[in-house]
Length: 124
Image (tube, rainbow, N blue to C red; front, side):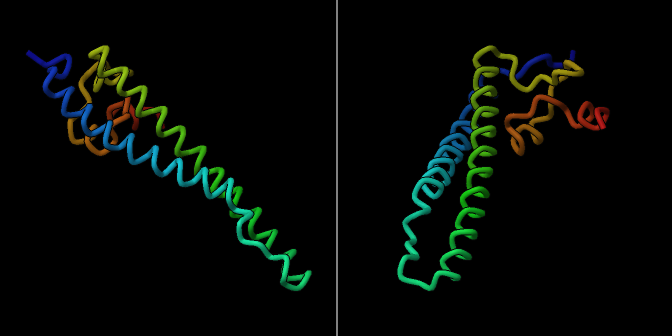
């Protein structure tokens, strides 16, 4: 008989992986947020006006790039949090398209996956 869900022990293993990734992701998010909010610390008041304008432009671009990275990181954090909820509901690791178990190897690589490779490839 084919397994329809992961055992509690297996879910605990995935939970540990997710919590570790979540802590790392949160730390990276906080670092990105502080870069975005403290980017003005590199004062250019004592340099030539032309250079100052160039530097401010580069600073704005860097801020935007860090802001986008921070948004992507927040999305990743939300996906990981949703995966934790699926663990609590014991629906973690079940493909939302096929209803079959997503292989452990895939879940270890992408712990927030909700589709098997088969289902993901069919979506293309």
